[in-house]
Amino acid sequence: MKRTIILAGVFAIFGLFTNTLNAQEEEQTASAASLYNDGLAKLKAKEYDAAFELMGQALETADSSSETDIKVMQLAKKNGAIAAYYVGTNARKADDHEKALEAYQQGLDYNPGFYANYIGKAQALEGMDMMAKAVGAYQTAGVACEKAGKADKAEQMNSKAENMVAVAWGYKDWALVKDMAAAYLEGGESADVHYYLSDALLSDGSKDDALMHAEKAIELAADGADKYLMQKAEILKSKGDTAGSIEAYKMITDSKYVERAKYEIGQLGG
Image (tube, rainbow, N blue to C red; front, side):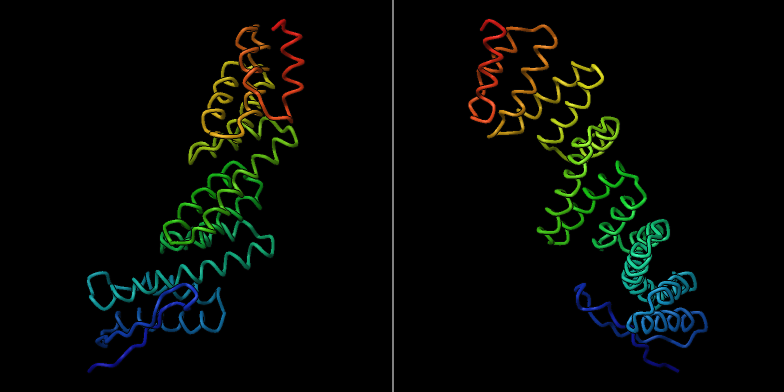
């Protein structure tokens, strides 16, 4: 005996569609499918915690050797990722960032292609004051958004990651700047982040490393490199490299820095 089991797709906002499966009334298959359908009904009713739990139960119950259950599993993972996002977001709004992080991560395990859980994970980490990890997570979210065709969101995520480093730099929290900048640079390049890291390294006397990052900032900044040239000149001056410092100061043309550069050149006898 056969019956039709309606396995609807996730909400249209996430770009997935309704699916219909014909399943034999084998006990385990029906159980997995009915759990999924119950979970889907809860999801549509915005009862996200119940939906999340039922999607998980459907996946646990499904028989991976059954063709029908394989389809159930595929849909349960897609819908489970959506449920996870809402569970995580509700938890995060209630300041339960640990629960939020757990939900977002489960959602990513279900469906690594669903970009919203990457964003949620980064937000949860930030809420837990795990700033270096949050910076990396925002960059990962940016990559996921780009793959999903969400270029604007990808730019927002990368800007957020860079701004977090900038905020720590503004507070002169040099230890945090180092951790966050290192996390950022593992996932991408930024002239400003190299500059922030250069400043942080200079604060504890790591002049050679500070110079390396200042030079990298100059290299990445095709235009508007004067701020980074000032940094390089001052590091070279502190290292006793007068000729190198004067040379760097002479390359500065921006009116914001040029008078100071001229003064420093004069002080150095250039």
